[in-house]
Length: 234
Image (cartoon, rainbow, N blue to C red):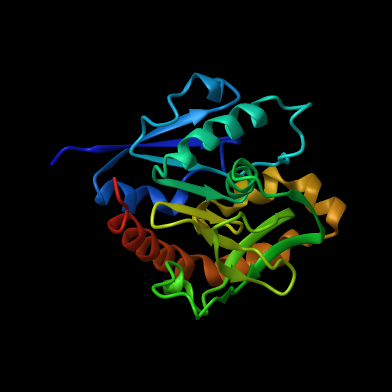
């Protein structure tokens, strides 16, 4: 079987593909990380990868003056999404996708950091997130986005209405973090220690909740991703 290539745009080392690495490998993908601190996204061919994944990070879509790579990523995504090439965005990645599709991205009323289940849109036939029903996922964001034109809303929470959207079978944007690994969660707590302190969020509680929920999330998200990959139109 010919192996496919997934390019994963990474903004910060510990926000990687996590639990998605194994199901991607099982589905026949070789993983190529693109660390944007070392390689300008504008150097990438936007249509080349069989699958493009844009991962999370601690900057905002509106930080383009301070971090020019944001503009490069949006330009790359605009071309790729116009061609309906398989694309997955997580947190910042989903926000960049929404911006590339012409939607507004902006700070939410408050931060959403912690573990809770999604409210899934049951009216959506074959919702790709259906395997996550009643499974607490990790939320770690303060920004939100409007639903892109033509996009289908898949999930919400009480704090943020737009938690996930799709655009046909090949485009999936996830505001939450499905990919987090329990055994590596301490990286998140250390790497975002200043943000947690500023938001007055207790790392002890987050650590305890991760111990209870991460295992179930890893299994559910691996199954969810496997199904989504099988329905891609290459």
